[in-house]
Length: 489
Ligand code: HEM
Image (cartoon, rainbow, N blue to C red):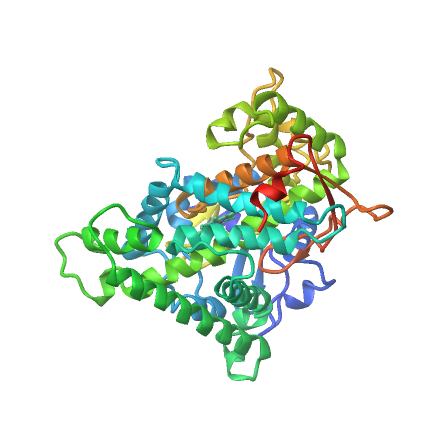
């Protein structure tokens, strides 16, 4: 990397001691919009100081591909942050753990455990479909009254993850399910607000309401998951794993951690903490993202009733009303897949992914980047780049079809990231999005309450980019009027 001449020209925002470039990041815009605006004046690749941390921001597809794919291994690190260290017992998880041989083994173990319950078997489909049935019954029980779909959708997705992780299936109102949702919400509400703490670690010594609420929620989470873990250890067999906890417990015995032939010690094997943090992360990474994507897509369907109708005629043609939708219908419902993709393009729930760090000295776009540099990939700006998308602010699922009417996925569409740090839950998430939306739209139609304005599409950035609350009215589609009687509680 002898491109020192170009490294001097990597644009950088001014900075002050301690504050870094913060004074130049005013205006109250969320980071993905702020960075997109800065890219207009500074170019698609620029740098700034988040407090003391030199940070490179990537706003276009070409450089994102370098960071995530071409030099993916070199940029596969994660910075250590106060809130996430608390959340993950110092990085014994997947998403926030820095790169290491043990992390690699752990990630592979999680990935294969997901696969076990995913494509290979019908278990996952059964889990999702039973949750979908209760969600449909619950929504239809509104009987024409308007309501906010968010709590029911979040509960349904939480239920899927509970079954997948520790085999619990809850009925509506179960106190344990409510506990899971409460602590998850406590984490979601506080982790993003801890923002400043993550720039200035010394702030943790000052009283901080968010941080103590976060600690409280984590304690409740850990109590519940530890109980599940102990129950699983006591009843573990060599047979087929019942759920993700079984698969992790069985897999860690077979694998042996960081390196074969090496002595297994606390430092290079998958400990109880790792298993626990993985289970916790299935909630942390898998619930808010999936349910929020569903809510964005519903919001856009309310803006575009013609899209909803087209999905429904595709469903009528290919599935009908005589049976439930299943995974094998996916290839027959290309337009629905386009709608899902377009929803994730126009409102990526994780608009700047998770921060990456350079593990070695490397380069981006010919600019040398030194080890330890933080890199933010602004997927929002890539998904809205007018050079790659015609009228990027328009919700238009047809852009995911080629001129033969076949599905086509442009390479600058990366809602799950790419490369060594790509989302481990991608196929699970896609399966859930498909089965939830297909089943909902097969059985009911969504519309705005009388006289209500369509949902606000600006969104609000918490842990994920989410729509502001909105209300819907649902009506059963022909053939599904009696559904609530069949499946309702
Ligand atoms: C990472 C998106 C659902 C588990 C990520 C990343 C994105 C993402 C953008 C960061 C990639 C990067 O930093 O480069 C999504 C979206 C989802 C979804 C849009 C749903 C629509 C899930 C689910 C699970 C999951 C259901 C698991 C149950 C993870 C984990 C990571 C991750 C463990 C960290 C991977 C790593 O750092 O190596 N996801 N995700 N996600 N996701 Fe997802």
